[in-house]
Image (tube, rainbow, N blue to C red; front, side):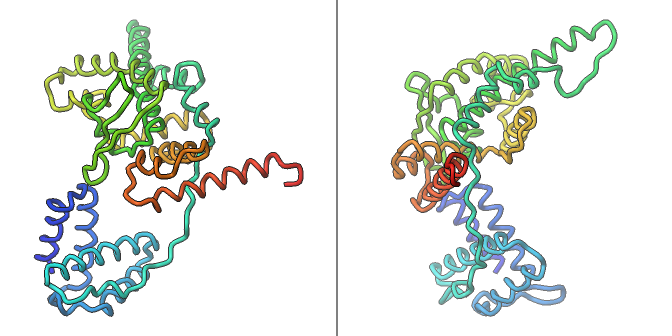
Length: 334
């Protein structure tokens, strides 16, 4: 089975053009299944000997290990996909995971900020609100003493102001274009048509799409471009591969997805609000607010880069919930 697993992962990489993250997770799931089939001192069964009974026992084993239903469902989906590949390659006659039931998962409606809340949060980063003032403070809690203290504090404030401009631009773009965080960090300067306010986005499976963005995101980007040039100059990376990236860290390198998550959490904390906000929350808000303003569901599907309309339809539930919240707050007999 190990040899078949290796061929399957190569198939995902070269034929399906799956992302490195997807390939890594599928590899881990298959390796865990192989480890279950081959305890110490035992040889794993041959691929044709794996039946749906073995797969069902493996799922029961995962339940006993205390795994979440969502994790078990993902691992089972990985096995189904792998065995489907094996059937297509005539390594198996039938898919042994096809008859194993997927754990029933609760339907979760994404929590979405209202348009007013999102606008207030982003407007604070424009330099007028308390969030921006706190972000542009001395920075990182450093305490300076001695003759050089005023200069050091001024430099720290300047550095924080630079990064505030970058952070505002990336947050505005996440919301304005409904980007995945991987799409945001993967943006290159050549992907932005500044005059037309359009982005060329490389989504899942390297599928490209064109997404417009609004005037506030444009304003934030225009304020960020000089900052980006300064980051490249001071780190002497103008000829490095990172020089093509739109969003850079303080070392002049392409910003990572994890860093974007930390940035979002930072400004939620500075805003002193009790929101469970993460980068994907801005994508949820983008879709939900478009839908609430009458946008066509098919158009939203195209903007988000969803392959299936059913994936986009979850935002209709979020809009209905927002309407119920407004009703409960406004109706005198609610």
